[in-house]
Amino acid sequence: MEKSPKPVRDPKIVYTKIFINNEFVDSVSGKTFPVINPATGKKICDVSEGDKQDIDKAVAAAKEAFKLGSPWRRMDASQRGRLLYKLGDLMERDAEIIASLITLEMGKPFLHAYGETLWAAGVLRYYAGLADKIGGKTIPIDGDLFAFTRHEPVGVCGQIIPWNYPSGMFTWKIGPALACGCTVVMKPAEQSPLSGLHLIALCQEVGIPPGVVNMVPGYGPTAGAALSNHPDVDKVAFTGSTEVGKIILQASGETNIKRTTLELGGKSPCVIMDDADLTKNIDNAMMFTQGVRAGTVWVNLYDVVHPQAPFGGFKMSGLGRELGEYGISAYQEVKSVIMKIPQKNS
Image 1 (cartoon, one colour):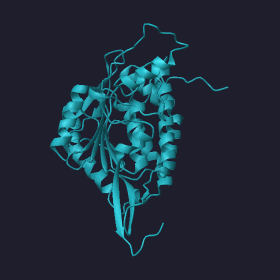
Image 2 (cartoon, rainbow, N blue to C red; image 1 turned 90 degrees about the vertical axis):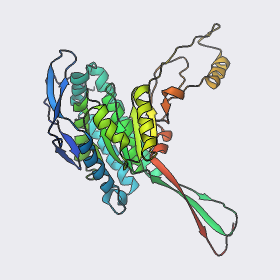
Image 3 (cartoon, rainbow, N blue to C red; image 1 turned 60 degrees about the vertical axis):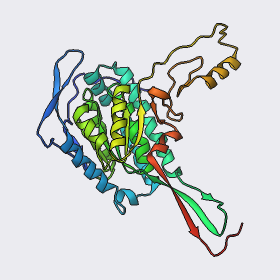
Image 4 (spheres, helix red, strand yellow; image 1 turned 180 degrees about the horizontal axis):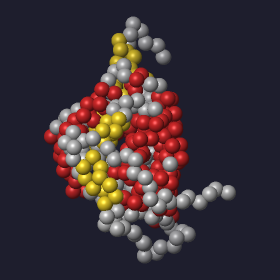
């Protein structure tokens, strides 16, 4: 029989600094910000406050790790998958402490935080399995030509995650990025940096090379803005409000036209038909799912989210999809290669 998870009532706070190039370091400015326990209103601890200078350092480290010939770029895709799988194992090993940190810093009930963390470990295992199954194809182009496509990692990815699902959002973002071979600079929410810093320390423990993953705690208008405006960031992923999503999309366009995925505020309306019979009328349900413009439609259930199925919104609810095979598309560039050959045969 599995033992029941037990919360750590007074978890030791080990990680409070910025993580760059596999090292925990103070912010360049030396500034810190308080993390508050929402249940008591009291300060838990102070965490290094990153701003533009720290983002610049983290992006430089990620850019260096992404260079051609680097250990990360030379690593076999299957080995990237093994690292992700092991990272999921370490999350499961530390699930009680991670969940306790989440409860402490943002108030989520412990069992909910524990379940979220185990679920998040499954996301990493899913993308671990996809890592060596990402590839292009040959194309039967006309003429004496040979054509094929390469699916290449997009590059340095800025990832900005919210406070409400700290461990889940960590894996939603980092899983597909690392599976594809990208490098990452992540900004956790200022309300919940402690669980994020513990998770990033697991990346160090698992053996991910220096510079591949970096984490800069800080505030949106400073660290977040610097990340979304940085010219050496190739892709930005954000989960949060529609208002901030608009600012990030504008920043991406004004700098280097970054690839941008936005998972924004959805309203999740419940629609009950006049002739509803929950055991029949599947035809009506199918017609409705075709007509409604929404990224996810749940029929006779609610809030079922699995690593295998894509999640995302239409219109003001965001751009792109996360989870599932669709979740890796935003972290890849497709390169077409066409070669002249002496003679083509079928």
